[in-house]
Length: 156
Image (cartoon, rainbow, N blue to C red; front, side, top):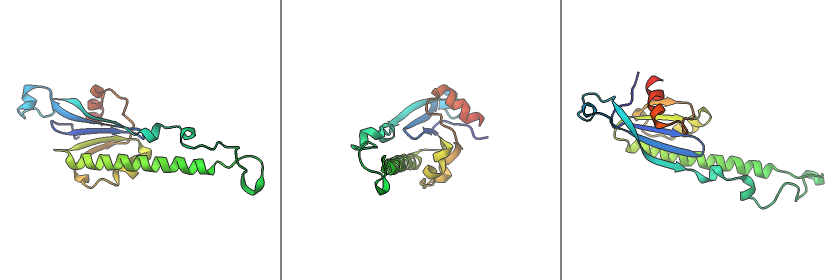
């Protein structure tokens, strides 16, 4: 079982937010390298992906019903909005993947990652240095307090 040690990064992400914690020594023994698993987490990056939080109605000017649907039938076609939602999601996940890749490459030691199972494969396929990834939890732990995060990663 891989436990978080001094110098490791913990990355928690979902579709709209990314947080990065660094494991710092909690005791003098940990600082000296004798008990590397006695750590506390320090937040080093908290990033919001604004596009993921925007409402579709704020991005488009036409509302459903303002133009005719297919073949002149009543109602409106909202396929354009659906495609826009997919495009926004694709771009946000691309940004998250790029940021996680950069963080993994810069990490001094190992990286522990938590990301929603729905996005995990798409995001982690972009990571170049997969050997640095010690553990991946397919859950959304962005809102979990950092004290509980350490326990969740160590016991998984």
